[in-house]
Amino acid sequence: MGLLSFLNREIAIDLGTANTIIIQNDKIVVDEPSIIAIDRNTKKPIAVGHKAQQMHGKTHEDIKTIRPLRDGVIADFQAAEMMIRALIKMADTKSSIFNPSIKMVICIPSGSTEVEIRAVRDSAEHAGAREVYMIYEPMAAALGIGIDVEAPEGNMVVDIGGGTTEIGVISLGGIVVNRSIRIAGDDFTEDIQEYMRHQHNIKIGERTAEAIKIAVGSALPELDNPPADYLVRGPHQMTALPVEIPVSYQEISHCLDKSINKIEAAILSVLEQTPPELYADIYNKGIYLAGGGALLRGLDKRLSEKTNIPVHISEDPLRAVARGTGIALKNVNRFQFLLR
Image (cartoon, rainbow, N blue to C red; front, side):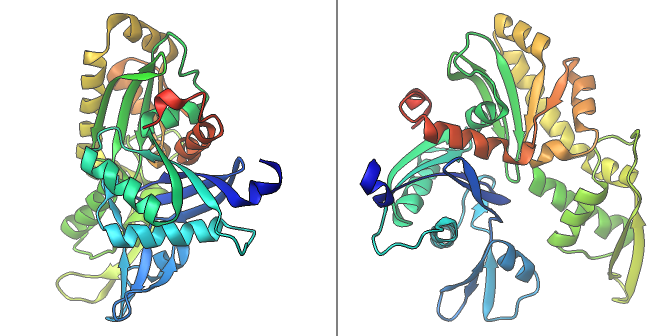
């Protein structure tokens, strides 16, 4: 590219329901929550990412916070376009008088319909991309974990994100069996809100439920290194007076049980459909966990007990998909068969 390199930009985007990560030149340049704050009167963005998240649940009538992605796909087209545009601008360290041509690789849920894929492509093009490639999340996660996706052997990846859980069996550069279910981190957060309302009569917002999940979230009622109880403050539903309640990890494991059961059922159903030769490879090598949900305490142990197969949490699971998308961008010609 030489002299004209400033006219071309290559970026990889992990457009997640909870977080959006942008990689440029093998470096993570943006890692922000997927949320945007918009002025209701002018319809213009006020803040994006962390700044918008701080406003979430605390706005007045002139400001609206929007999470443009729901269940891994674009729910609000205009907001998504504005958010992608703002995040790309955030990633642009060198301001230039020229409008560079942007080549983009974006990862999408493996269960996306043609309409949903078209929505992501259109949003990216409206945000300034000249070339847009798509890669399925299980494949991106496998690349990010460091699996040789072209090898003639079976690898199973479970990516638990914010909106979807992606389960894929990968061999010879393709997804042999896959399942995408809309039970993931956001559902865990909702389960916690529901539980606090029913069990303790206390109203809590999304951000507080998220904080509880991070502090005392657990998939097992018995842990070797249990976290300390988390103090929750909020209004009592009946009296509206402030209350303070300690929440233990046992309670949270109980309230997340139903959602985790659905993830377990989906994993078992994928294993059921896996050809026997690939099943043998997975049994020997284990299942790889990626995504923010992989950080839930005891989840690897619980899944391992359920399937009788070893379960490994990938290194830095939150960024595994983004890293894989970056690898696909760097080797677009080599991995052409993986891209849409």
